Every structure is written in structure tokens, then in C-alpha cells.
Image 1: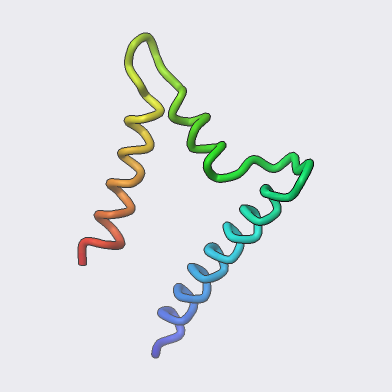
Image 2 (image 1 turned 180 degrees about the horizontal axis):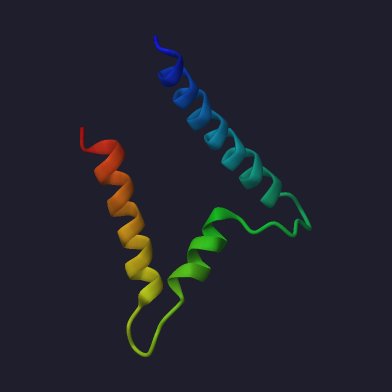
Amino acid sequence: MSATRLLVIVGFLAAIGLVAVLEFASRRERSRIPSLGDVCAFVMQYEVGRVPVGRIGLFGFWWWVGWHFFAR
């Protein structure tokens, strides 16, 4: 295994661990950290006129993630 591949794998595992720790911290009682669901709900509410820009942006993000990581 090359050093670059190992570095990328460690980076992704660290990012997943950080998200898990933040989600756990957000679910504690009287926490001021919003959960991932709260953040997604806030983003999805954003509209410009009658255009649901937040939903389109979130859909675009998931499309990008699927295209780059799951399409192989």
C-alpha cells in the first residue's frame, strides 16, 4: 500500500470520526451544537423567490458524492 493511499484512507476515517463525535455531542442534553439533521433541515428551507435553492443545492451535493465515490 502506498503512502498516499494510506494518507487518504486515514484522512477519510478521521473525517468520519469527527462527524460521529460532533453528532454525539449535538445529541447531549442542552447542547448548543446543531445535529446533522437540523443543519440539513435549515439548508433545505432556503428559497429565493419560489425556487427551493437549498433543496437543489443539497440534491447537487448528494449527486456529486454519488458520482465521485459510489459510481465505480
